[in-house]
Image 1: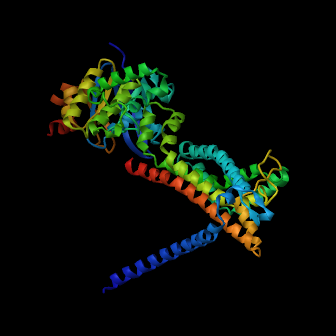
Image 2 (image 1 turned 90 degrees about the horizontal axis):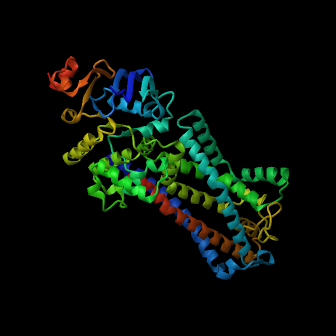
Image 3 (image 1 turned 60 degrees about the horizontal axis):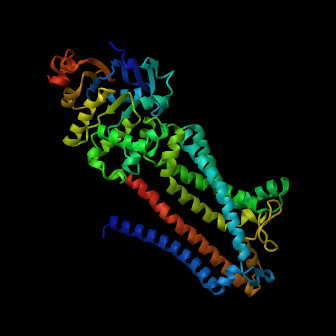
Length: 285
Length: 253
């Protein structure tokens, strides 16, 4: 065996072992959640309200609360991410301001979620006096996923063949008309893919909402904005896990985790065709 | 004598310190087909992009000198989007937007004026006939445009430019990658359009220039940048060129 061949085999073995180790860890985590969560899962678990401080009943209001946070995040993040991506791609072409905006988005993307929680606590809960509110949770989660969505959309817009833009401009289309007729339709797949991946992250976050938007019990469906917290699946899991000396609480925590995992898988499954479509568009362009 | 539709005077285009074209001066008259010929790198396409204002607005090149359209300085008094509707540019590589043939034809014009379905249909038929494409696609106007052959795509791009009703059409080597049939169809279309539009065509095909031009501009890059060394009637340039560069390029001597 030559030295060159030996080196190739070593390189391959190390790479394959690293990949297998990662896949093994993910598989183990999934197995644990599914194997321990499935016994707790049932339709009544998903549809019944919580009882006895999480020792019995289900997670109806946690599901509703998580859905309210998710929809609020979606509604808030879409227009802002779209505007940022358009400004970033169309109006700040190759300028230093564009580079600064890219840097800010990347830095924002790396901020730990607990920092968003602290920011929300001091600004919305304390300074503005909103108390715990589902709306604050939506604002913080949308701030947290904004960079992911805006950067994915911006990247999608940048991948649009330049000849489309040049041909549209040569026909006398204004920048606004070009955005509406070329940039938005052609980057829709990237946008939806980024949006769904962002929402996947938001739905599982605990830190930004635990001080600002969610409580463990005592809330149902909000009837206002200020002082109107919601229950949520991640915070429910967090609290039940702390009650680990109660076997029933632990089982319900695994059940809730399994449910959350199903929601995350569902959103990921929804994002996949859009992601594939975005790549297909690049290949055929 | 009618005044020229387009007057280009002392046009300079530079990229940083590098001159791309220098001292370009010519007129384009109404109802006339003028062809620009010359070796690669002599700045022929750059002139078209400067006239359509893609050079300074989109490519970041520095353009100086004067381009007057109907007496108006295009750098000062013509809004750029309106200018591009009046002076349409057809590119060398046909660009087809995703969607149907119908959508492609209406792509530019639907942003400029609202139209009823009937008017849209009339316009689509008119411009596809002008581009010599109607017979080939009349039964599949709602089918995806990317299924067309490259020659048909180029004629579709041409029809899309005609739909915005331009007074001047700039064509950048529109037949360079086309089969003889599509080339002939585009040449027929250009001859017919001469009566209503002024046409400025860049081509590498001397035969094409000889067949369809009224006037010919020859550009040379022998000084390291593109410049016009000779221009005149088609017979003068092809039969009796005066400048040595033109003689070498056209007569190969």
